[in-house]
Length: 134
Image (cartoon, rainbow, N blue to C red; front, side):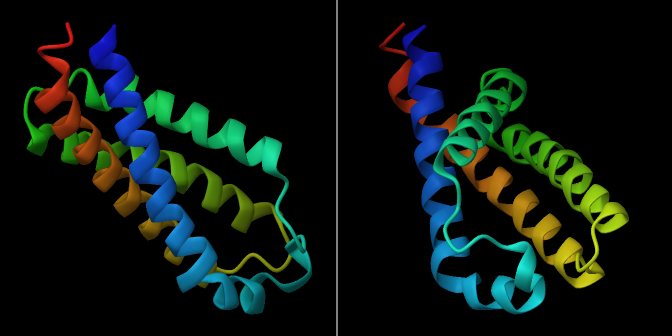
């Protein structure tokens, strides 16, 4: 149980840090330019928090805890990110005016990459600190 909690916290913190830098610093102007009126002035914190908690739960349950090596965690993290972000971005592209192929590909690649890094970090921290924790 403690190993799962350690894995969850490590994966969550990694994902939040990566996504915070990506969305808040690196890409904020680009997303504003490309998505314009689709974006809120300030994001809604409750749905964002639910997304992060739920997505990281999936990362830990489907990738971090079952993986036996960091390479496996990275590969399965890539698959999860590819499927999850692909579903989101392709659906938006198919149904929303103003959602472009550029946004789709950029966000899809980012989500896949961020999931790989977060799952790999979560796996490493859980392996390092989770064994003695039980």
